[in-house]
Length: 367
Image (cartoon, rainbow, N blue to C red; front, side, top):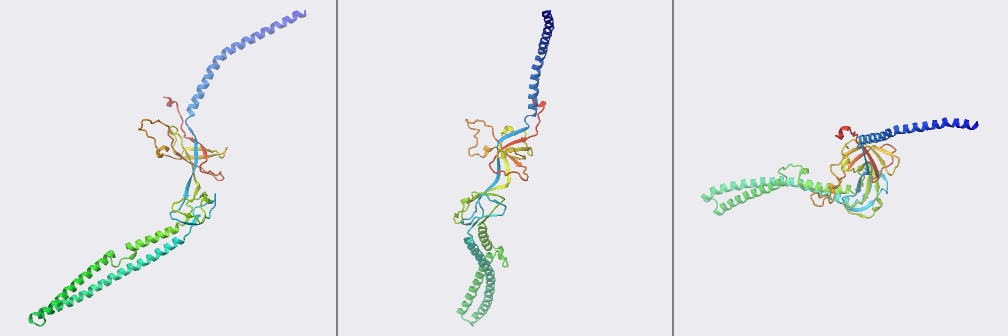
């Protein structure tokens, strides 16, 4: 009795399990083609979406921080008297960076001033000398008139025997000599007038001798002014210790460096194939290796009209037989949108750049 009951209850359970197993097999047969085709469809859709959205952002990992920099030097030679700045000190425009001993240059300025004053006196004397020469011509012309009158009288008297032939000849020679003297004085006066530029009342400040003397004074003053070197822009001085008071600094010799803290930009060098859709004003996202987790916004400020190799010492020789085509890089300058409290960006820091070109691909690009 017991055994018959167990057998009867087991039969329906086995039937149910077989039915469920058959149902799962039917479901699997139905899902298999759906999953296979669906996976392919998902891959196709994903690839299409990636292609459509791709090409908009340009990533560059070889960008660097650049800043305006200047090697501090002077065009005059002298002994360093004072270096009022220290290594790493921040300066503003007009701050004194270095002083040379001004004494030799002050002496040169004093000598140039004295020379200018002497030149003015000499030029004024030339004007007075010309006036004196004119007076000499007038005096000698009066003497010629007197000699001419005497000669006329002697000419009348020599025929009647009133004067000797010797007295007549003497009067004639005296008249001729004084006439030549008048001509010589006129020529001398004309030479002096030419030295005055043809104007006897000329302002000496317009004469070449005065201008030359003034130029020498200006040059001496310029050299004196250049004994004090001032910061041309705000920034931070570096390598200051290379110059010490008492050392001789030759003209055009580098003293130390000045790096701007305000005129800072990013220089990126993307491949030429990446610049297809990059344009001025495109937004840029920056990340600096020194400050992980922090980003800056920026804009494309300029795109160089040439590749970096154009100014290389040995540029590409495309006409040579061993030329190999290499993808060129075009410098791109990026302006940083700096805000109050941003960390300091130092020249030479490594930067990663992402440019948003705004370019969107369409299905038409496939055809």
